Structures are given as C-alpha cells and as structure tokens.
Length: 205
Image (cartoon, rainbow, N blue to C red; front, side, top):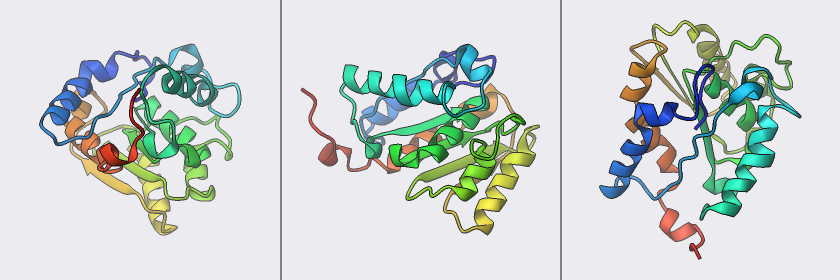
C-alpha cells in the first residue's frame, strides 16, 4: 500500500489500516495477509514511471525482497498493489504496465495529474490500451476531491471500453478523514481475491 506525495511509509498505519486488518483477521472476516507499507521517497516524487523509476523499485527490489524474506505467496495471485493520492497513481501505473504480476490494484483518490507521463506510462492511457487480462481494478474518490476530473474520466473511459472495474464515488475530500473512513471497504475488496487463501497458498516453512 503506497503513500502519496508528502507522506511517508507511516501513512497507512496512521490511517489505521493495520489495526483494521488485524481485527478483520481475528474475527474471521479477512484471510491472513501481509501489508507492506513502503516509503516513496525522492524517486516516487520525481519520476513518472517506466524503467529507473519508482516502478522499478517496486517490481525489481521491493517485491523480491518481501517474498524472499517473509512467508509471502510469491505469485501474481498472491499479490495486490494499492495506494492513496500519488500512491494511487503509482499503483495504477505499475499494475497497468505489469498486469500479469498482480491479482488486484486499487487507486484510492488516485492523483492522475502527472503531465510528464507519456502514453506508454500514464494510467489514463495504459488502462485503456494495455491488455489487463483478469486484473481486478478498484477506483474510489470523494465527490469533493480536487483531482476527481481525471479519475472520473478514467472510469468513464474504461466503462465505455467495457473494461471491468469497480467504481466508487463517496462523499468527502482528499484527506485522512476520507481514507480512514473507507479502510474496511478497501480491505474487504482486496480480500475477495484471497477467500480461498488457506487452500491455495503454499505452507509457510
């Protein structure tokens, strides 16, 4: 789960995602899962995507490290990627360019405002022109979010092209209050792909 600009790896913890997941797992509402909360740092704030960008950090460095260090499910069916604000842009950018590496992607108030991203990188284009296969896609945003225009257009363009995705328009703006209010919805949506985790995932050594 990726942070936005001006945020650190602590943002999802601040919002309460880990506590919400722990409660859901203990109550049997969610399958066991790992939540990775990386920092974006300079490269996430100063690159648009493609080779030698934050995309490469996630795909070539972070994911292999997690899957060799922890008891993770090292396959596309075991991976999801999501983010808030600029992190939502990154989640969509990475998953739309590598749809065979993830089962799900979530753009939560995704800031699709990068004018430097070319059509081979920008999710507003790759989401329409790349073969996304069976990738599950979730787009949500608050009605008062200043970045709603491009996110709504991506939804409308995907709908017009019959590209399956979940679109959720909520009340609220672009802030912690909005995101923390929808944590349970995010977790429930991601977890749908892992309802049979106990059967399908390999045992931990």
